[in-house]
Image (tube, rainbow, N blue to C red; front, side, top):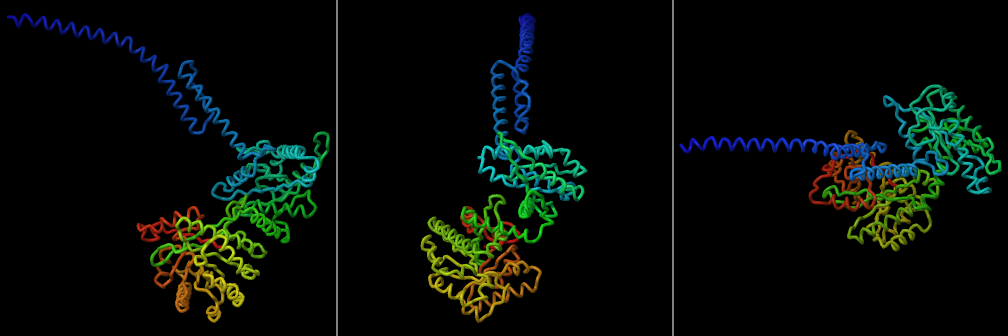
Length: 571
């Protein structure tokens, strides 16, 4: 009876508790929903909007709007972020201006001009865009600049720049989007082109213009004449009337060159031809005589002389690897020219000109001294690297060559037994008596000698026995043909057999495949070098590479991949 009486009481209590909880829940909902909405509206959404803006800015759009306008802490954060983005935008604009804009004329500079040309070389379908470069040099500017001062000279440059922009189009005078052409360009070129015109100041009193060359044959000629007439008009600066002329050289891509460097160089040569014929006129590279094209070599010779004075030459090292042990046993020293405008140049770009002048002796001496100094640094760091350096016939013929080499070894403290001098087969066989006389004292000092590019000349066994050489270097042209050319295989076999009979070592140049390396090893070749093992490297990279290559984990040159390519010629 008591149980039945307590049951309604318990049920009533449960109903009361449930009702109370329901009321509390409803009350909480009434207060929490508006509170949550207020929090989302005033905190979450602004932060989300700020985050989306940050993503937009990180993608490069520094003009993205900031939708957060508040006076609380989030507003302070948004304003600080807006100011930071504005500062970054201004700094980037300043960096772009410094990198791509001439500070005097505000025209695109040389680097911007180069990028503009390079970016428009290839058109739709992979075909080259025809375009002409007009290289403009101001006649008599130096005289005005020296007579009236740099302020007047800069003002004159700005006036000429403004005239060029007016003749072409204002949009062609900025380093950016240069779509559209001015009235003159439209008239002379007649039809639209994928190459927007651009005018730039290259430096000093030199300007350059890029225009499309897809219209009539005489169109660019007409434009060049317009430019001459535009420049020659008198200029009044601070009450002084000045007049300059314009010598213009024109080169057209791809007819007159395959890249920017060649086109600009040929336009420069054509400009020089215009100056030689009186100036204040335009001259096309395709129309100048061979005597003017010889100026290219003259210019290169002058630049080589300046490069020697300015220490613009660098050396790189290509390792030589023992064919049996796969250990690095030395390196060949290769020269490179860090040209201020054209970048890093391989020897093929300048050695011929150096050979035709006395510059090859100075260059050779410079390379030898740089190599010995670097070899000494490695020795001081505990790394022994035998070095091979090329020697030209002019160096061998120069009086005092032997003593000069010994002096370099003494001043650099590089051991003579770690130095090998390479002489081409043609040089060695042309005058073996002189070569022997020049090399024997060095041989006595511990220096070894190698015949470079062996197999490309005409060697006499009698002369070979008398010459103080102990190494043949098989020319890369024979190594390249080992895979398919039976003639090359026969020549390589003969050279190796001859070396064995003379007790010479054999170094194979230009080894690019595992198959070539295996054939050479099978024939008894002692040493190899080429892209299979490594490309030429600057000294700071070579030392680390040498240690990694000699690591016991490495078993075969093919582990780094079958690197194909053409080994560059040494100096």
